[in-house]
Length: 453
Image (cartoon, rainbow, N blue to C red; front, top):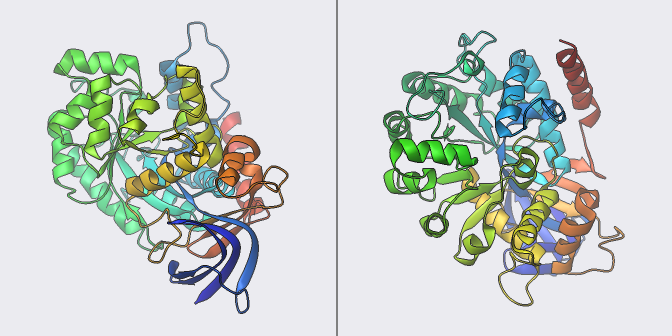
């Protein structure tokens, strides 16, 4: 039993002082307020539940910055995708593990304690499956073990090149499986994560561009439990193409035809009608928002105000990992709404409510649901995933309660993070991951070789 003591903590029923946690097997067994520090490891600062990262493509960390040069035509998501396709041509399993470990280290230092890895780079350089079909999934699991981050692994089902069963291109050859082989890959992913504490495996149909209704139904029916994540309505062209082919917009189709519910996370969901927004909120599915990546790619802005006002569930993710910061994603989410509606404090639910607190609470609950794990709260029965803010930070020192979250999200950002615990184990101290130098060194060597290739 490990016994920790914090000066302040955000518990399920609000802020508390002098909080003691009893932790065994990575899980909080007891939480006491007004506790005495005697017999406990004492940590100064402000303890928060660690935020789940509900959407990541870890390998894209190594291409951050490579698509910021304007091309001969108007740049868009689709020209960025061409850069990404060229980048994955040379990635080996060793490269994927090194890059993912670095991305996971940065997530932990940036306030995320668990990640849903939307993993679609499956096969060898020429598209041939590895002898061990889930080789790449095993590398993601190894990176999670090395970094210490909590993992929900989401093998991606990718069968077609565009809406309506269009054949894939050579550039997509490393992603592609038919339903039967994909389900074998999922089993391999489950084996790969067995050694990790409290890991989970779901499935991720890539998008309605890359599946048909028949193949989507087949893989969903074959996996009756676990999270289901899918890119949905990220781009206006995607919406137009799918509506022209099927007669329904993507989010409408998923709600009507697949009965998307609490198991589902619709990633981005940027381009929705008012009716779709209301229906998604009612469904119980999570909207997986990645505001920094969505801004970087020029996707558009999720209409969060009506979605939140009708009880919609959302969480945030780092997606392309162009910048990895839990408070930064929440800040960008609120700021996007301010730019869209030309107002302030728009995602707060009522007069007098802290915007930071509302953002953090909602993203905790939505992220935990999307990852399918008992995380996101400092309470008995939950994983002991804890982010500790430095109470002496200049922007937090004069604050208290919800104002700490406002200052963390909108002012100090990841600079305020002092320590991070995952499953009760201290992974980050004084803002630095315990294996940063080793993991960063391997990453730097990997990227140097890739860029010069």
